[in-house]
Image 1 (tube, helix red, strand yellow):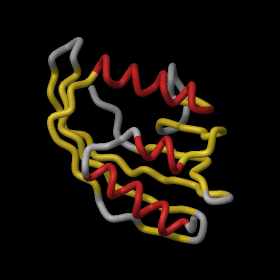
Image 2 (cartoon, helix red, strand yellow):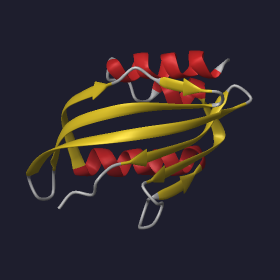
Image 3 (cartoon, helix red, strand yellow):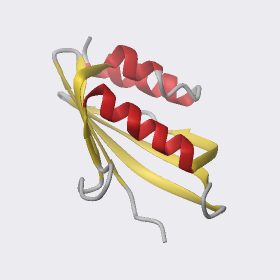
Image 4 (cartoon, helix red, strand yellow):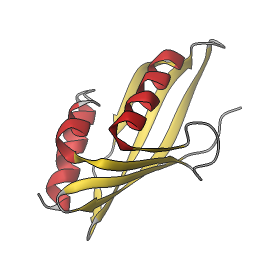
Length: 122
């Protein structure tokens, strides 16, 4: 699959609220996922097991009220997407809106790296 096709599929699923199907079809088993600079607990994970643990942590800690997803911007083997999320942090009850840019790298028809850039809350 070409980068543009992968980007379009990822965005289509995310717009439907399906954040699991992309991992199954579009991601390399050797995926690297980084939050901002990759420092801190859970900010740098590798492989499907790491992604799964990160997803479980997210679901335990956040209720998502709404998500908007931009169209992808593609450049060679890279693409980026803007996400805006209205969430409530379950432990504190604090509701907030977060805007982030996700950058993805594609090699051999699979997403091998994702990195999310956003301002830290609080």
